[in-house]
Length: 391
Image 1 (tube, rainbow, N blue to C red):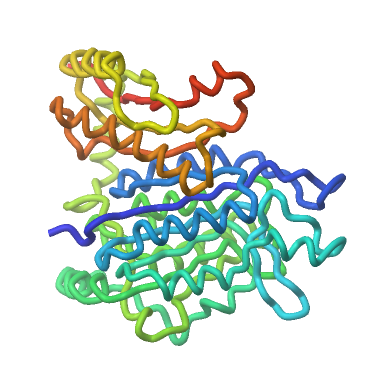
Image 2 (cartoon, one colour):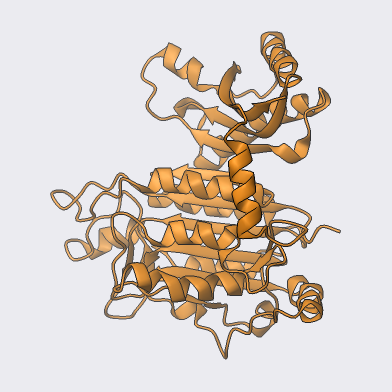
């Protein structure tokens, strides 16, 4: 049986900081591409992904509330919250904050900073409020981590097969609220993250203590704490459970295979074979009316044509990305809902035409740069990206 009823991730990437000449926070040009790579890995773990980029503090708060309300009421859901961007710790009281793109330098205007910054304590509140069995909070930022300092050691599951499965039947089913940050209060995240690529490696299995296709949140946290400093000696990730015994009994679990990971020799054979396989990558767009997610006949015809093409191919993955224009974003959370409804509408239609659901992933994104009415209409779309091989 599946470990979870559903898996949902909210990924927030802050990149367009205005720099020292204006507000004091340097731009982070790599975060958007990095978070797309993380989204791809999480989709392979069965997550439905929300991707948010360059949001203000108010918008981040709205996304957090809407995401938690939408998915945090189901007891057996798995939730993952991720933020990449600047972090800040107040030297007076040690409180930690996530820094949105509209935050000013607290040394220049501390009151204005507090109006837009996102307190880490807000995630502590979310961790207590959501009813889902497992929630994981990962921050590619540096700040004080006092809300999640662990009491006692983080015991890992044994490599012994019987012990491992005993773990999966106990801690994997007990409540867990786990936190990982990229560094401590006195450290600084580099412009090009070393934390995120290693997080992706960990999710792909590098952090597992047994080659059985499972990796846990505790394994990921400790593996990052051990390996990030080897690439950046000035960065030491923090990891721990929430300071609440009832919510710290379990361990978030990721299953990337029902069988053991392939050996190096097997991987080499697969890589050699892949040299002779014709790989295809292409995309199509379908369009929607304002604030609607109902497929038009013209869009159905485009999708039907795509399904006919897929009959000649072996589908690897299909990513369906719903978009909204800036006028449809009555609020950030509402815009996300419209984007996801559009993506789900296309996914359901594809499934009705025989496309396997296990290889189809959905995501919502926003378009804010549209300037003309034609630009707005083009933004109300779903992009279907296909990765496949010829039969």
